[in-house]
Length: 115
Image (cartoon, rainbow, N blue to C red):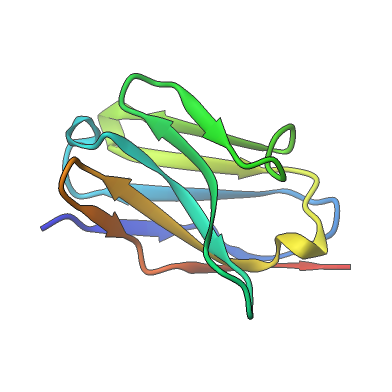
């Protein structure tokens, strides 16, 4: 069983920054990809960014230039640094990890950006 433990969400003013962390209970190399989705009230869950096993990264258009995903292989941890936050970034952010056969999810963290 894979567990993903998230930390770092909270309340920030528009233009501010937040860093999210997601620590996995198993080696990061077991996963094809790890990353973050988010879900705002009344909206579908959407990809924010992910990082592949080979180290390549992928960002949603809204995240490009503002968010940075990275990982620490030794700590089995993926990070999401979010800068220049906007009120529309308000959502529950979910860490995920994907293998060939399964996708695992963190519990979700609220990120609220006040205007």
